[in-house]
Image (tube, one colour):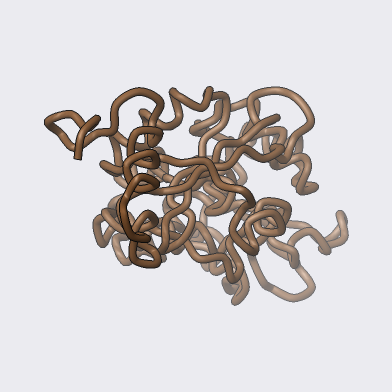
Length: 263
């Protein structure tokens, strides 16, 4: 096949030469051949009206959505995808079924994801992050424990930084252990705006972090939660008790919430 370099990369516009070669075959290519050697890309509106997430580029294979980034032109996105996944990109007529509602809801739901190439630990980290409910946050230590590696807190941060499908796997809901927001692949400002759009009280989180409060308990139920847990948000102000960690809460006779499972 001509028009392909020594590394098997199509020449010219990413995917263009490959499409032309397949179109010129004397007989029709077998069904699905193109999708087995190339991936598709589509541009969609982002979850925020302006800023770094105003427009998204999404790549998907025959196995599911594989890559999502914002703030890139089509060629830059195609090159980044090809460098990471070794496949060219071709334009798609429409997004895969379920992608738009998954972006709107901030979790994959039934959307197929192509996460091949991740290590077992990376996959476990992303699976844990995907379980964080909309409008809530969890610290890196919680993700590490859910992933089966409770001491690998720093490695969790690295794995989330390589998340190929942010927004679908909501790593913006993972915070530092002190409750402050921390970094994000699209920047700290985008992280804050996403959380505010989900009705997370970012200002309260910052104030609790400043005071060293990691968990919030109810003196009527004796249950202690992460501050953004749905149960914690229903505690009346006069019955809220703050704790610097689970050990202090346990020593005071509180028990951990069965919903957010504080570490």
